[in-house]
Image (cartoon, rainbow, N blue to C red; front, side):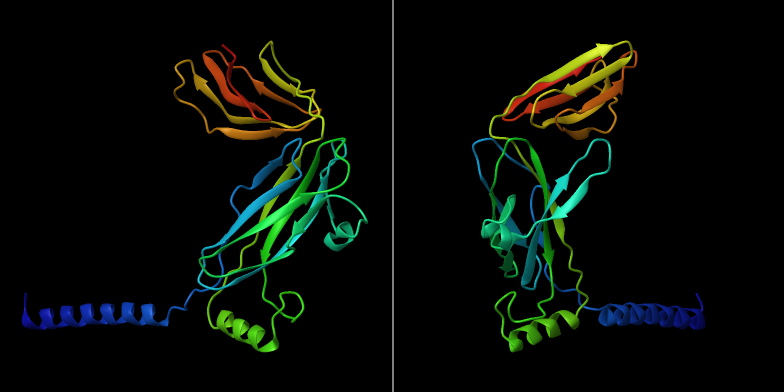
Length: 258
């Protein structure tokens, strides 16, 4: 290789290295809270009236988390509706549902706080709620009991970085006081039908179609089957349906379509 080509190659290598260094140095610092709420589907069983959720902050900034609760209302075949609940009103005896205690969380970086969900009111039928954990930027002194200087300092820290505050929602199913399970599984013609005639949800976990040797399976699905609902799947020759049926604390591993 000629001396001129060698010199040119060295210059190009130095240019690329310098460019990478500039990109690295100019990249914005990513900082902020990052919460983890654990399981996204929770169940409050008969005889229980509280649910403790551990909320973790794996980020590098304090998480100020607002907790909101909505009741999920199902009416026939219509899409589900969400009705926001008033935490303070329920505490004062005006209404029923889930009370979040506390309604706000302050979780230090790398820390954890426990949020307790308290079930109130009659439980003659199964009920469903969405509990949202939303990291927010404190804007007033009342919500999180911060003074103005603390709010400004936190806002300055977050604004100086690229902060993505991601919230999470957990679905909470509250069973009735008197639970009755009645799951019927039938195979008629080429159809597998699983029907819930009880008054509490059952879970069909790991539902997948496989060959007879339980190989070449499709992607498994987890399904919550509410009272009065049915699930249907096609039965295919030389294939079986493999799944686990959960009724409360009881689990059964089943095969259908043999």
